[in-house]
Length: 274
Ligand SMILES: Nc1nc2c(ncn2[C@@H]2O[C@H](COP(=O)(O)OP(=O)(O)OP(=O)(O)O)[C@@H](O)[C@H]2O)c(=O)[nH]1
Image (cartoon, rainbow, N blue to C red; front, side, top):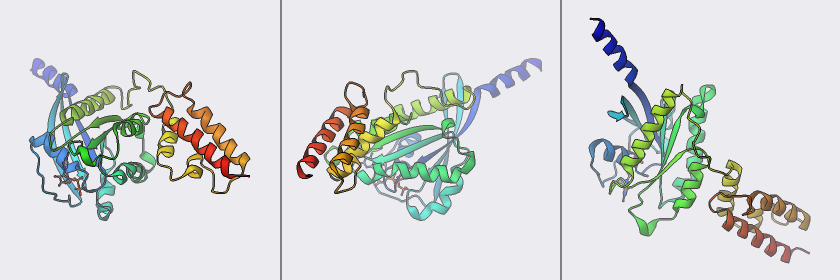
C-alpha cells in the first residue's frame, strides 16, 4: 500500500493540467491550427467559430504528462460577450494572424488589449506564455507581412514566434512543442515566465519605434510631428529617433532601414520648410 501511495504522489507531481486559448481576427486560421495539431487534418472550407470551441488533448513534455484544455475563441467582434469570460486562468495564449492580411497583424495589439481588460486586476501577463503564429505562409504570393516584422513584434515582447501553415502543417508541431514546453517550464518555475536565456539585445521602445516607422503614412508621421511643424521641431524629433535607432547602438532587426528612412524623412521635410 505504501508503495502505491508513493507512486501515486509521484505521478500527481508529474501530471499537469493547463488552460490555453487562441486569439486573433476571424478567419486567420485559429481553428485550423488546432485541428491540424489535434486531428492531423486540414479543412479548406471556412466555418466560423460560434462563440467558442473547446477541446482536450494530452501531451508529453519531458517526464510529465500535460493535460491541455484548449479554448478556441471566435475572432468575430460579434462574439465579444462570449469570449470575455474565457480569458481568465489561462497559462498560454496562441496569437494568430494571416500573413496575407496586414490588418490581422495590426490587430494583435488590440487582442492583447481586450485580454488585459477582461482579466482586470488579476491580469499578470508575466505568468502567461504567448506564442505568435504567422499563419498561411503557404500562400506565398499574397504575403504582405514579412518574417522580420512579425518576429520583431513577437520577440520584443518576449513571445515565441513561428511561421505556420495549417494547410501544409509547416511549423505547427514545432510551435505547439515550444509552447507546451515553455508552459511546463513556467509552472515548474512557480508560475513565472522564465527569463529568456539569450537576451534579445534591444528594447521594446526600439522595436515599437521601428514598427511605427514602417507603418507611417508620410514623413511628418514618421518623425512623429504634426504636419506643418517647424525646423526646430523636426530636428528635435529627428535627434531623438537617431539616438534611439542609430545602427551602432541598435541591433533590433530592421533598425538600419528605419534609421535611413528617418534620415530621408528629415531631409525631405527640411527642404520644404523655410
Ligand atoms: N491556405 C491556407 N488556408 C488556411 C490556413 N489556415 C486556415 N486556412 C483557411 O482559412 C479559413 C479560416 O480558417 P479558420 O481556422 O476557420 O479561422 P478562425 O481563425 O478559426 O476563424 P474564426 O473561427 O471565425 O475566428 C478557412 O477557409 C481555412 O481553410 C493556412 O495555413 N493556409
